[in-house]
Image (cartoon, rainbow, N blue to C red):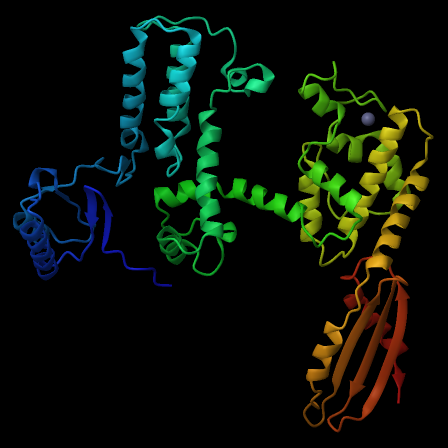
Length: 483
Ligand SMILES: [Zn+2]
């Protein structure tokens, strides 16, 4: 639980020293500083030195230490390396300085006549870069982001003094990338989230940093960053970083989506990867890239052809799924992306083995048919699509089946021990025969002498629902063979 003890943070001439608020400890710090001064020939500037006490420091102790150092007590918004070292209740005041800095930069340029290209460079290189350091550690208030954006926007549209120019293109559009013919200005809120997520990513992947060790000990001692919660007394920095957690999770999902554990043919895996990244050549995606005039689904003509529409909401897709008899254990909402569905399925992969693969295969079948239709190929009905897709999966899995030896070798090591005198022990085991789509179940009841009292062995034809088996087992009790 204990984190590393931090005695100091040094960065060239900006240094922090931590210690207990006792006279003894302060005397020791002073002694060290004197040694430093004597040997380096440098002197501590007491005007630029400040002290900060934690809340529980008694007033008497504060006064004594203050006189010892001759330093002023920290002002509320003092900063370390340009970042506020203490974030109090009023976030607005804490970050007011930031707004002032951006405002000063812009005010300096307003006097000058700048071309649009010049303004663009200044906005990107300076005005939007000034807050980025702060934004990589703290989540700025939405109102502050809005104010900063307004300032930059007004500068762009040539605001002189306070007069407002008509903003004839929405800022959201201005923030779209250059490929789309826009300016590629930063959306500050999104940029803020991206920077915080980057810190979160560091916490998830780099366990050797001091940053990791401190935060790990304080905020997620028993799990990883992705599972971390806010906790009881979160600092503003932690609250900020945690707000990027969802973005990191999404990033990790890409990894899961690319995962090796999904057993489908390579070409299908490639298709799934594209679908997860939403880069399939759907009408919607082509339209977004100005390749087609509209984004309507060519099959039904009712809705934009998004990935989700093609695979779940188009009448065509509905027909395929109803002939597949494969029911997903959750509802898909139209706003979901393909990766959201995959993510859900992955989480259920223990309860429903093979469901991810079957779903991907059928989607691939739908996608193949959709492309056939567009190019005037032969049309298949839902049943045919499902059959041919699942047959390809079966063939692939049979060809790639690995002998399952691990289970047996573990079983060898575990010895059966008899139950206490007068009681019985029930042993249950099952095996899955993937090729035959069968499950075998065995039950043995033995007494304290190890004598078999009753036994049962059955095999079942199943699709994929493993979790339903256990409860059912007890209902087959009447089938036991009593010895
Ligand atoms: Zn459609």
